[in-house]
Image 1 (cartoon, helix red, strand yellow):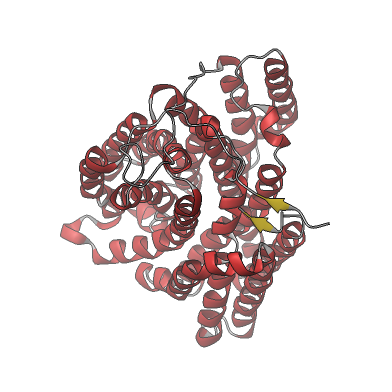
Image 2 (cartoon, rainbow, N blue to C red):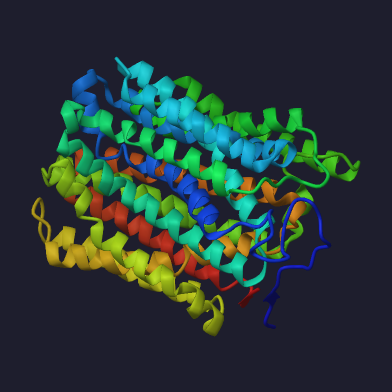
Length: 483
């Protein structure tokens, strides 16, 4: 039986504007551009350091474990605090949190760029992740609260396109900036470039982004916040640091504690929900079929995406001996095709429904297979025409999945819970991105010494291909129509 998905009609409330685009609390085109700029920055910075890591390691005399913390420290603090960031936006105003988060992102980016040693950089990256967690949930919450109808559908499609493009463009931009060595800054420019962009974003936010908040602000759930943080930390930290640290006892103890922390979090949240209190993540939210099934699909997609981006950056630099620019530009066909196809996504969904997502998964799988074949046929000089073709095909497939799934996840979330809903979705995505680096990255780095770079890369790509097959299967359970 075909399911249909529509956005439920809400009664007018102070936390959203659906009357007209001209309404003072509506999100205009300049405001939409501004919040999408805020969405791009955190995602770009998750991936921008991938091609810069070898240079950072040489310049700061940092070992592999510390370099992984440069990536993991940002990702873990970002994931842990995202839902809290969404709740605080609902409580104090999303525009206000967006402004403060963006300002903090600029300051912490400057601290990263000026870091005198590796551990200072790690601390600054943790703080930068926290700033991202304050800023990013406000983007989707503002879109949900200050747009409606076709305008909301367009804004959500643009958000999904921005998210996917940012993840690929971040890696390309990182390679270009490191090689350009602007004013002798080297790898530091990948962080310093954020500062002028943030200044522009703050000015535009003050001029064009409306203030929205929940009509009934909900207090922060202290117990839920702590238990969610413990759950994510006990999972993500040992997985990201375990291999480089030699899997010491603390990593196994942390992983053993994870199911207990996660269970305690669920029970506390369920009890609060049943008593009419305000849990950090209301279990009742998962009663929405669209949200639940969309989140389940985001997990393997994001794990595969981030794992691929990390592994290909390492393989092309350490195995194929490419410089940062060449390693980054190798993914430019993926970025270009993603952008073009994502623009056509809304029209395709309107005509064919969410089976477009299934087709996208199949296309992405073909692209990954072509990349694996290009590596297997020739290494350390891969079959470049085949590899670039595979990257372009994979980018097209990704563009037919990510923007649409984002729309599905949030389509039934009430406007009053827009901050919580967006926080849950982005936390799921961000945790999966961190898991991708931890799992596929560790698999590749663990196999390379024994199997050789080529076979390790091909094996990792085949594992990712199995993940793509899982997303194709999960896409068949999505509602057929996006409202």
